[in-house]
Length: 209
DNA sequence: CTACCGATTGACT
DNA sequence: GTCAATCGGTAGA
Image (tube, rainbow, N blue to C red; front, side):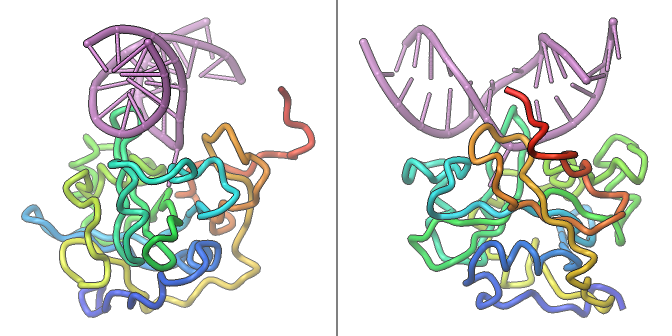
């Protein structure tokens, strides 16, 4: 039993430091239901974006129309576009504190056929490896910006029956694709999981430019 | 209004 | 490994 019996994580789960939420979201089940059916996957990679001292955070320079969801209450989705593609975050900490966790990759476990169709028949490993790929696989777009993830409707996150990852199985490293605050170890993923979007940067001290 | 740029991806050398 | 596509959001005139 599948995933249909699992309840959404409560708001308290999200009402915390985004680093704690990012780590604990690993191994959780991301569930999506729409008119096409049901699909779900295990979260294997996340990144935390902090409310303070984090220039890479979209909210670093204050609230705008785009990032408004991050200033709202915890447990809601913040969905933004980059290069015309969608990415999904879970908002953390109380309203007014703009922090969030970017969900970067999932391991497909339910509705795999549907997810592959949405991804134009991509190989299983490529179906949801990367923040935009997983949104396409789950049919997540702007319409879900601000969606409440604690209701168990449409889109939510739940604790699956499978065991919680041990701390030793979680790798922390630097975030991907940003041009500031590149040294903060705010990316987390499950070690050796083939659905993680890309491996850790070899050695921060080797970084050029 | 225009100019700039990006929490990416897929194609290509 | 490198690089351009491509367009909404943002800032500034």
